[in-house]
Image (cartoon, rainbow, N blue to C red; front, side):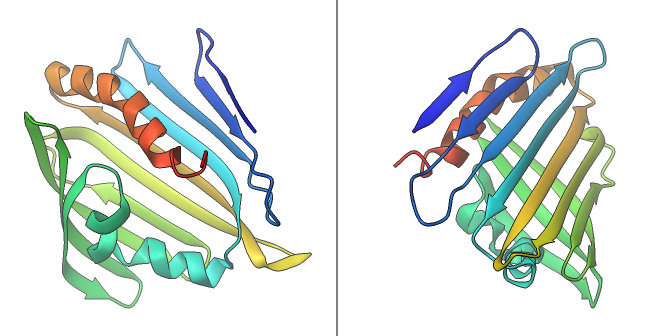
Length: 176
């Protein structure tokens, strides 16, 4: 069963699957037009423990295999609780954005990433919070947020156009 409601404010998407694990997604995308800051938030219950999901989120070198529009993900420095990675995000066929992400990890509950390449973004911050569900040790709640602001108005415009497509692509598999 799927429902999608568009309002003048943030985009809200609610998806429920009739499977042994009921997945609820509440997602918000927000474009703060005056400042060109864009925010995407999502809270979701998943059928993986915090440890299992932490491993996936912290293995940035594999992002190009499953993150929409991520064309390249190479870890350049890895420490026990942090790493740096070069990422390329491609919006077909005309725009490929390269930047370095600095990731901090607190196992198994928190992964944060900050872009310090100020030639492309004024800011880019990503947070993954993984919270255990006491009654279901094989599940956790994921609280994800990304906030970004491009320096270029052109990049901001393209990002606004593509953001809905990213949301649809990311959740396309859930509908099936």
